[in-house]
Amino acid sequence: MAGSSNVPHKTSLPEGIRVGTVMRIRGVVPDKAGRFYVNLLCNEENGEAALHFNPRLDESAVVFNTKERGTWGKEERGHGFPFQRGQPFDVFLISTEKGFKVVVGDSEFHNFHYRIQPEHVRVMEVGGDLQLESVKIF
Image (cartoon, rainbow, N blue to C red; front, side, top):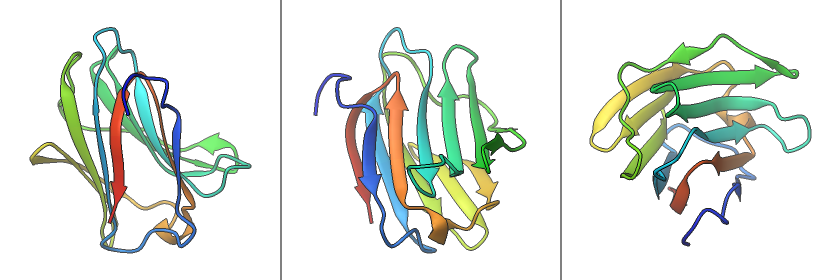
């Protein structure tokens, strides 16, 4: 997969996510990137999101949130900013007992406590300003 014509990319998760599920997203941040996102959606119709992971290069911030009944929750921001324009990245979203552990490269970046339980997730969507190389779920 090359270029940015491959986003948004959707991966179906008919069984939902269990504790121990690892989602790996690899790609490259384009030179002129503004923002990209990974959404763990409960279904495609109403856009409920158990996790909205949103690196914002225009703000040098990574925002985490949920969307329930059409309304965004309280935003959380990770500490630091592990993404750089023109650079490849490797993100792991790991489902733990209490929440999603987010690992970028080799270091733990943020723990996002569940607001919506992971078994409700049905779709992972990756989009925005990125060159997506691979999405793996194991």
